[in-house]
Length: 106
Image (tube, rainbow, N blue to C red; front, side):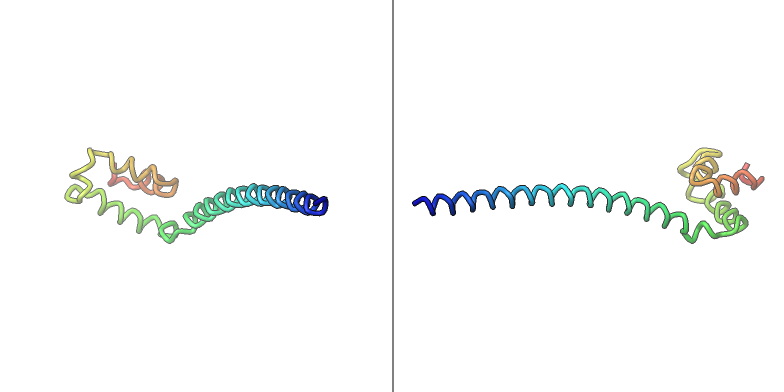
């Protein structure tokens, strides 16, 4: 009977050790998942920085913006005067510079 109690205690101790190890691994997994999410967000930000639209010359962007902001374009039905220019200028500094340096938009 003593041997059975000893075996049972050893098994209980092993179960407690395994439970503790599982909790440690769970915590580690949560930490790794957070790190992974942060890295994914950084990847998305850097991917946006190398987006093909960022490599378009200002003249091409100006031409595209001209089509978007034209009085007969679809935006004129939804945006008030100069709202489109303001909206495009808020996208990024490059777009703002193109909008502000193109006289026909103002």
